[in-house]
Length: 205
Image 1: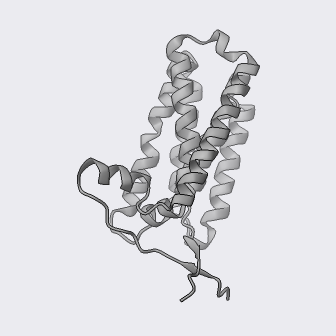
Image 2: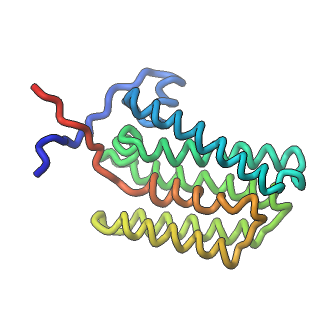
């Protein structure tokens, strides 16, 4: 047993009103170091993403609304992967509350809007891509959520790889959007739905 680490599931109180709702959405009690790593990661990965899109030349073919969708979705996915990987988010979304499962599944289902925006705006009405990914998302989420606890991590990775491979070979997108499926399914099927112990270094008394 590791004596230098401890698992901390305690969720701090949140303020009332809008500020409290935002804090709960992001995960209450996020440490300064978590926030710093998240901000740095968002900055670095967002720059890499948009530099890659620019280098691919894809943005030359997109209209203003299409570019806006790509920018908003890209930032949301990078930020979402990082946020959902924090101890604060794990504590909140996997707390032992009666509605925690419902909250997780609603969060995942809300991302159908991302698929609609990309499929119908950026991909100019590609219903095959949109419906295919909606099916992959909802099926994968249901499988991961109802899988026994000790198998959730490997099953979530199987669901992720399945979605990425299907997108790579059967739901093709322009080169400049090749990042979407890996980040989208990583955020939701692995980072959000898999419970992990919020580990912290044990404080010396």
